[in-house]
Length: 453
Image 1 (cartoon, rainbow, N blue to C red):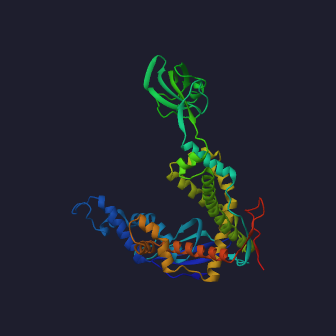
Image 2: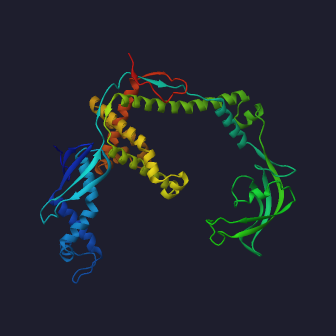
């Protein structure tokens, strides 16, 4: 059992089996009363009592009117999360998963609040060799297929649409007028003129583009379709419609020749050979960044392979849940809901969690090894390193790194940044002392991970 220095709350941490801890927390009576007073003041803003103006009822009167138990319950509901985070900070813990919280007996006036929780924490690692590892590193590549794909994309951007005789095929464009009807009645939004449509693009109602295949200029066609059941215009969803279509032009995308003239017009090079080499060099630079990231990860995994880390199943499940929730939260910011992602991926939440267990377990092992190296090497970021790491965020928030640092410190979030920087330094140390060896063919992702002589 180890007692930790108090912040606002005091916390005593007891180690449990399987990388779990029990944390006994005490909220001082003065802190509890201060919070209850603030809650009572907030509750009193909407109360009406004879002799008091609205919003001016003293907190102690609100507590008498509502009852101490109600104010205490609301205070705990509003503040327990903050006290939990303070306890995590006081205990210097790195939690994994959600806590199992139990409240103690409700305190009387002048008594502290006590509660405890159990939670998984980052596992510990017994380090093996982490300096002098031999790790496979591949050379950056720019294969011919990738170069040609880039050149084709550039030709696509420089292409032109030219009117052609004859029937339209998939990939061609048609310019058309159309009028749609439900039965015998035209409907709103069903008429258009000079619409340019690429056949095969899938932009129109299912079945529409397919019925335009083979059409030629000045030809008229009758298109029969059924709007999808989930069509955005509710009055059309599931409805059968008929469109009278007049084809005015058929256009075809014409790509420029891949020659010296194209190289000059597209990118200012004198020859297509120079353009091709420039594309290859840019691809090599991009792949060099990927190769460096792969090498750093391989160095860390080699150090993990030489260490001993016990990762209990419950901890793996908790981390898999965290990783999935983090990904889904990021997707929601992009407009993709959880339900939509499950539908797109064709997998259930349980299947995704099961698939993520291996990554979760390895993530925990990596974090444990890095933390052990930080401790063994006494690594700590300098003040300048912390401020440098905050430069970009401070600029986005129109403040200084120093002010942002102070704000994070007051919010109890600075330790997370310091820990992250220390772990980056640990990884830098592994990489700095590693010896890169050529990656075997078809095995660039499987480092040898053996100490060099």
